[in-house]
Image (cartoon, rainbow, N blue to C red):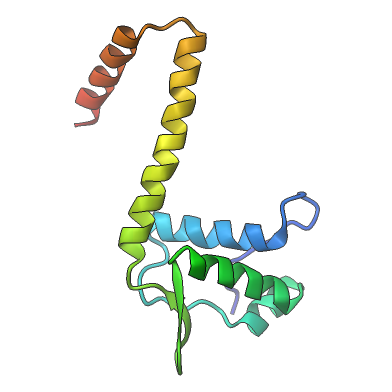
Length: 127
């Protein structure tokens, strides 16, 4: 059975980073939830035709981020703290996008008051 993970060896993005990002995005989207099992290192490496050490590196990174944990007798699963961790990461991602938008506004000559007016209008629409 396929895990749905894919890697592009020609993209220039390290393969372990591609795996990390796919897990992170699946957690953020809700397609992976707390307790969901990930493929074993050997199974995923075989499916993707890559070295097992690459998957180990990706899983170690994900564990360091608090997104996955290893459970004896069960395997590698999405962490029970994933909602908290995922929200923190989504907020960080939002802040990065916001910084970019503010820099764009400044470069376009939009004043702080104009920007706040735009934000207020969008916030009202979103509610």
